[in-house]
Image (cartoon, rainbow, N blue to C red):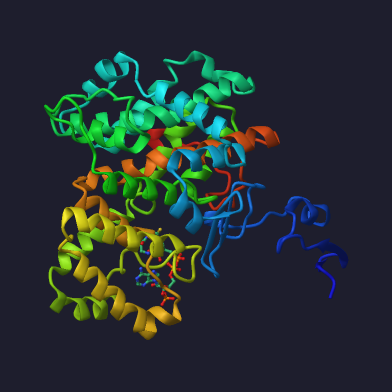
Length: 424
Ligand SMILES: CC(C)(COP(=O)(O)OP(=O)(O)OC[C@H]1O[C@@H](n2cnc3c(N)ncnc32)[C@H](O)[C@@H]1OP(=O)(O)O)[C@@H](O)C(=O)NCCC(=O)NCCS
């Protein structure tokens, strides 16, 4: 069977054979036969907007790989910093490469004092930490003017290291400010995740020692969230990056996309849903209500995964490890019951709705003491590695500026009417 399709323009009978490559067709091939005709695809659900070698995702089979490595193996054996290196460089580092990378990131964890004093402390006392993060990341571009040299490899590498290194510092600073606690400087004798936990929780002790089980659990969560191919925030990163804006401005746009409840806010919605359900007895009636069209089962279903989200499997085990230290999150039993009922129910089976990564991540973050407002911020820290990997790839591919078409549905041409002659 030929790996091609033939389209015919019925207006003039002309036909064109277009090759099928990787299950898709090139829009520019279509355009040869149909100049001026475009594809209507809101949400870009059927459009590949780029070529990418970063992440492979097969939603039907429940497969996720970074640079070819299965997410299960990375979550088991790797660290977030190593995964960040892999995403950005395409290969796992050698020992020497890893040591240099870790050292570089560690040496760039401090933020300019004015970022803290002028920006972060300038926010209203109850500012949302994600709003603070979006703005602070954008503000960084005003501190590093060399960031505009996006085609200078040395400058590019430097901004990437700065962003990976400073995100935890900004994230923790945003939290501390929003709860009225003093800023904690990075402790560069600590590994990446423990350093972040120190900046989050340190009070008066000379040195904050994170529980190693919790530090490792957070590292695993960071690995799971480091990239997810062309999601909304990565697309924002690529779209803004295509205008050749500096990486801080691009990352701020990506953070803003992540702020929305349809993207970075889903695990918060899970916690709110479980809290609303309140007890095991209420689970069956809640599921029935969802089936009758009253709301959705938060943390279930995915635009791409139509089988069990591979990250959700890993996270379940991480949850057990965290709860062995923190005590069980009281909402866990409700979550498990919900999952058990839904996975046996025809409504969810026929629609291929399975738990996604957000179903359990919120329970873990909550058990570790993170407030709900910090959930999208916790997502942004590791996803910065993915965003930057895509940004680099985009610049190396020298792609066109993103500029989609539209279907105009507004009024036909009409003449301006002076205000005193308009109908009231
Ligand atoms: C993630 C999500 C937006 C994907 O949506 P989508 O692929 O566009 O799927 P659709 O919205 O077209 O839904 C398809 C069908 O499944 C149903 N459905 C999808 N997710 C559902 C959920 N979480 N609970 C109940 N029903 C759901 C829809 O009602 C629809 O049913 P219908 O065919 O009878 O109308 C959606 O599953 C959802 O809202 N999930 C809850 C929020 C969430 O967990 N988001 C985090 C994603 S990582």
